[in-house]
Image 1: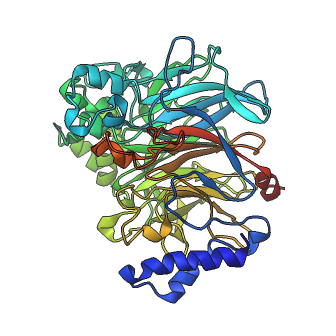
Image 2: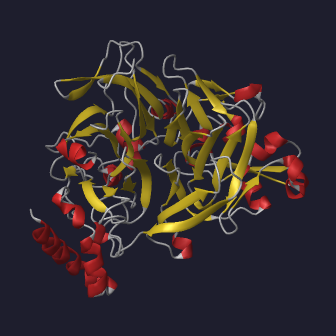
Image 3: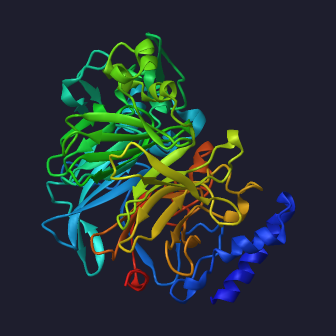
Length: 534
């Protein structure tokens, strides 16, 4: 399809939706222009659609590396559900062999047990089966004949789940224990310069509720849909941490100094003086941006900060530097354990649901995905750019909304980010499967993957390069070291099928023919990457 055909088809598509929203021709024109920018000689953008396919633009293809339920090692461990963040670590400097970390964020009980909603008993046996499906997977993969395949006889292949005992760093005792049962709600993450994986525990409250501490009084509640707490009454304070995983051994540790919150992302930078800095989002409406600055090269000592984006300041969450914190917390450990409350007390700026954070290695700019906040009327989200006033340990910065989601940009609800070697941005989005066909979001089609050049004639214009199957979102984009493969998760295809599993699912991706949909990790390849990254 040529550029003019793409624009005409897209205009026809969105025009059919315009009456419900009263869209102007100007807005429709702006939205369609994002499909084909002046860079279209290299890249032809897709038109949005609601097809039940993983659609890729011309010059790209994909193959599946692993899908939910697939056995990954000789011990019989199975690949978990709702794969999210991915991170690739080459073995011995190889471009064709390495370890792939994959998060498993959540479960849909109806899928796990192949039962209708009213048939679920929420028995201990059922919940244990669900606990085995979250956490993360380490996959030893190798490229043969152009395709990445799991080396299933490798000793590297392993699972961490909600039953794995994981210690807290520095021997900290939290709610009476120096370790937690498992890791769960694993959303985005990062990779450290010392070659370990970071996985962030996000919406833990849907499993075990939430705990708050107000002037020394602890309150536990907000129990939600999973109901694991009924069979496993575990303290919510054991979850919401950044978990560091050694890929060679599988050893894991919850990094207490990085604070506890419904984290999305943990992106690490080293300063010129060798300090480790970790940027973290808090995925909730009115959540905060956090930054940890070490006093050394790792996470042994350091300070956690929250962002005041109004005044461009990083505010220390340090009991000894804040009278407000001293009035509400007895110890620094309490400050870290209830980091959201601490950030409120010091005056950090609430954001419109901050999710992934990534750094452009070309210039050090920090980009934050703000997915949306219906409570503030920001239904389409945007991208926030932070420029530190010096190195990444700077305590002052400049910030701006670099891109607003919506009809003019052609992209809504940005979620995960990554940069390619030329400093161009790749963005996945997250429109809830319940909202994709509503009047406000229908014209964007299924969730997708967007390419945004940061320089040249098409700079700042999102171009749709991949479209997800029905009900799915694309998550965890991560390039291989040679930038010839983009690892990507296809999460919760067909998720609206759960109300009645006996009926045809809303999606049958990836196996087709009416089969149960399965979250999967794919490898995207093709000569388009070579042409974009000359």
